[in-house]
Image 1: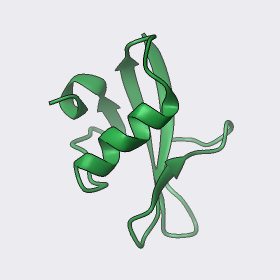
Image 2 (image 1 turned 90 degrees about the vertical axis):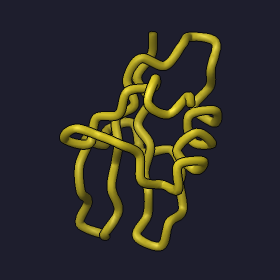
Image 3 (image 1 turned 90 degrees about the horizontal axis):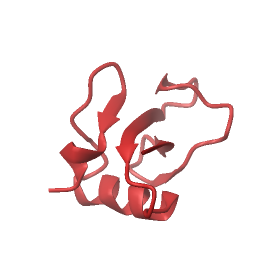
Image 4 (image 1 turned 60 degrees about the vertical axis):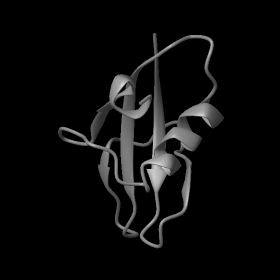
Length: 72
């Protein structure tokens, strides 16, 4: 299982986060989510698309998202 970091900008754009990003709010109004439990056969782009499908507002606890909550 892998962990990927995804950034959701204030205006709604969903992209990959920088390698050194930490989960939580940024100074620029974006939110960085840590997506845990991603199967090894999926790419970061798959995770970004899954976050887009939920409208950029995944269910989370302290900005940590479980892959199972996105893969519905």
